[in-house]
Image (tube, rainbow, N blue to C red; front, side, top):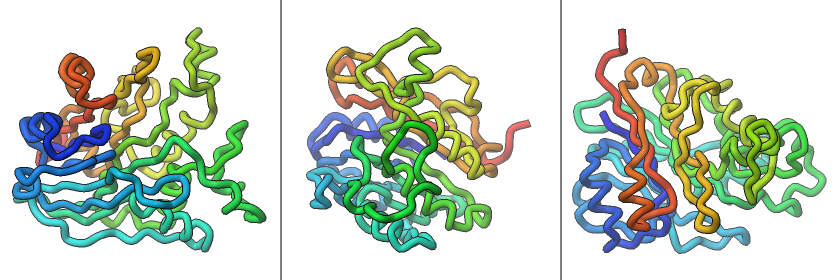
Length: 278
């Protein structure tokens, strides 16, 4: 089984992105920034697509989605014990697309396609609310889309089935001031909390396919249009049963995708066997 997550930079239905995706032959594709989907893919995959939210809550021109070569059994409706988190989950309903899917000749599993925007939750909506339990510790003052996702996952029965969570988290450890200072690097983005965001997912029981251990090298997935700096902003997390079946994980060909300006993100491509690895 092959699972791909890819932020396709607003690709329209006639974009060469879709031919490349078809050639990669995913069983499940978690997509972000979809401008339009061609008929050939709609005829091949069951699809669930919704428009992502802009800062003011109006729909963006692009969508977040789940494609499966098989069947979408049901959408997953996230909830929290906190009313304000539920309001934010409704706000981000087009950014966090959850589905129970059944790929052909495979058992069902739960998947989430994530598009966490580069802007935080509007502070005006959080005025007077205690967000200390969900906000990242340290110097990061805001609540982000990834925090809302984490708040929902903490309230979800994750051990009852297999999960895949992937997408454009807009979060890379290379953005953190600590990482840049330690590695003698300086980028246009200097922030904090990115490593903590990834660690939160690990503590929920997920393993990142592209970088299984936090000591492993960072594998870039994103190229900035100005300056060309590379960061790993795209992540693919899976639950324990799927980790045991993970055979390989890689990114798409930079020469093709960046070289031909197909997208500013590379796809993350993970292959799973039917049995665990010895």
